[in-house]
Image (tube, rainbow, N blue to C red; front, side, top):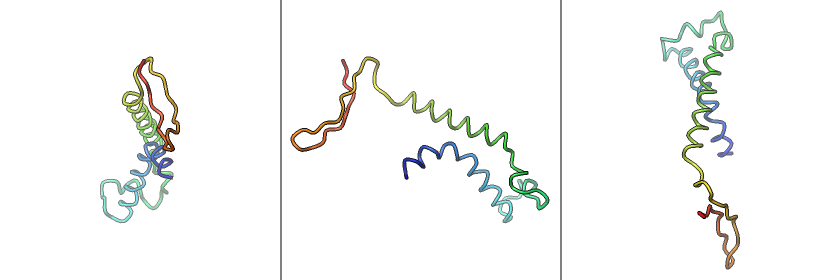
Length: 97
């Protein structure tokens, strides 16, 4: 469950922030976006869907770039899988050549 949230949180973050702002405006906590929540327009009609989708894609790409540049082994390394030694589990690791 935690892993699923960690994987989908970057994609859902802009939409959740927008929903929080809309709710705050409806209850009078934020006055600057009250025009987005007028009674004659619903949540989906007032939502800036283009910006939300663009922010979601940008967040997901940023997370993918951060993961690609911060994880991984050196080129030429080989993976040694997990194994059991003397009754205990030894985790897998990358071995340098």
